[in-house]
Image 1 (cartoon, rainbow, N blue to C red):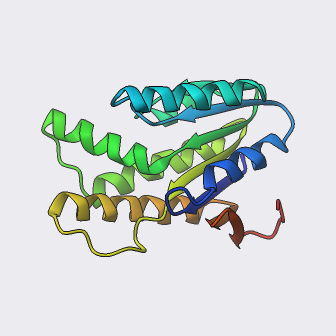
Image 2: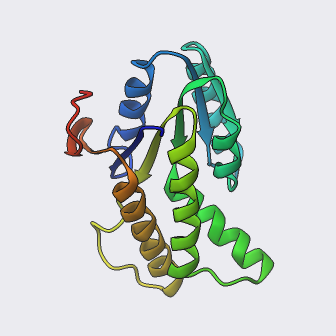
Length: 184
């Protein structure tokens, strides 16, 4: 059974940098699963810089917005897989559901996240998930934003329950909130 680690925090809190450092302390090949879609030129440039930075440290990068389970199943030969990030994965699932006229609610995300946790649990590599803590702010002013917040919150709770370790990162400082090992 694979080790599962969840790293959460606010935007620009340092969680992705911490996740990468944690992954790079492990032996074996490294796979970065990027869930961010390219939405404009600035985002394309940002993604390109991140890929180039990781390549210098021996990372392989796969861009996959929806089928994380399939990528985890195909991660043979890797010592660690870093999935960045679950909040964009939920966004992408919502977008796909909307585009195809399907419902997206807590029941759907509960099932999809259960499948994700199961896929991570049997992955041949350690799996590190990065996510945003979206429930610490004000209540969003519209239905879609509230649904997004609720779906990410449900996803985060489920992955945290399945994880061996959970870290909260704030101001670049990680705090372990679940697990007994000290990877800091």
